Length: 181
Image 1 (spheres, rainbow, N blue to C red):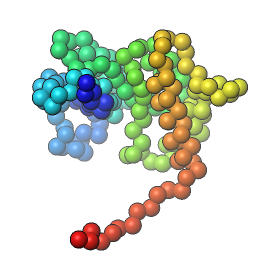
Image 2: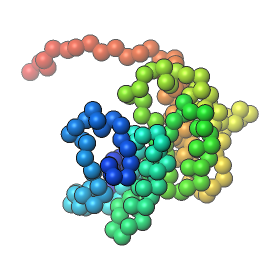
Image 3: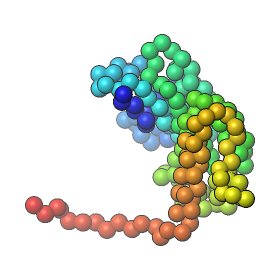
Image 4: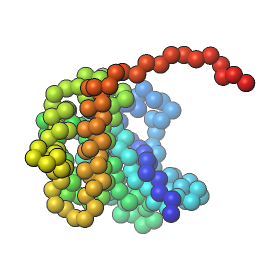
């Protein structure tokens, strides 16, 4: 079975995507029906929706919208990687709400277009670190069902990224000449 683990859907009538204003080639609907037709031709049988950096006020609506699409006949959607904002005060409560939903398979915070200071902030780091039990270092994941490891792994990756950003030197890139033949 081939599973697409990074599907982006865009529905301009349902959600707001502020970044699309600077990306005219992408500033259009990318509906599930269009994707499913092409995916089936390529042998894809299932997909996970990857959050699309919607307007912050639409984060939970994006997940609800995608979940509704997953319930349609013939949908390839099997879950979602939801957006999260570890830099926000309500991060812990948000995670608790999302964790109760088995459709959510993980979380992502888009950082590549954000200033480094965002992930360097004390609240961001505290929110990531605060997801662990201090006594034994195990992940604090509320009981839901078997298979909570992906949820914990996503938080672990966020913490590792935050730690690396704080301790690792920033990469530098030097231009190289044309490849030798």
